[in-house]
Length: 235
Image (cartoon, rainbow, N blue to C red; front, side, top):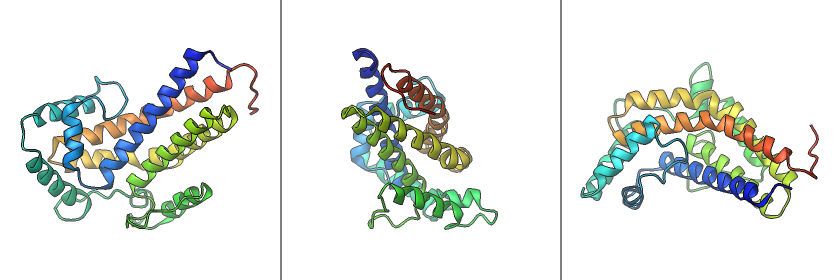
C-alpha cells in the first residue's frame, strides 16, 4: 500500500478527472445556463483540470473575465442560439456530436458505434436517461460514461479495493482508445471551425487537449497502483 501522501494525491487526481468529465458532458448535453455562467465568472480555473497555459484554457479564462459585469441573461440567450445552430440543426454550420457520423462510411447516425457503446453501458448496468433523447454515442453520454468510471474508481479506492480500482482504470483506458479518441479530435476541429463563439471555441480546444493528455494520465495511474507493495494485480 502506498504512503498516505501518495494515495491522497492519487485520489485528488481521480476526483479532478471526474469533475472534468462531468463539466464537459454538461456543456455538450444542453445549452449553457446562467448558473453555469455565474460559476465560470466567479472561478475561471474550475472548468477542466489540465495545464492552464493551454490555448483552450486561455480562451475560456478570457471569456470568463469578460462575463464579469456582463448581462448574463443576454450571454445565455446568445449561447443558446449558438448551441442550437451548432448541434440542433438551427444554423448553417451543423456539427454532428455522434460517434457514428465520424466512424461510419456513410457518415450516418445510429450505426455500429452506437451499438458498441450501448453494449459497454449495459455491461455496467447503465442505460440512457429517458429525459435525454439523443443516441447513446452522443459525445455528452460518452463523456458521462467516463465520469461514471472515474466515480467507480474513487468508490473502489474508498473501500480499499485496489484491484477493482485498477479494473475501472483499465475500462477507462479501453473506452478512451476505442471510442473517444477515434472521433472526438476530428469533431473538436469541426466545432472550432464552425463556431462563432469564443466559449465553444475554447471548449473544443480544451476537450481535444484534455482527452489527449488523458491517455498518458490513465497509464500513469495504472502503473502507480500496480506498484503499491503487497498488491499483485497480475497481467
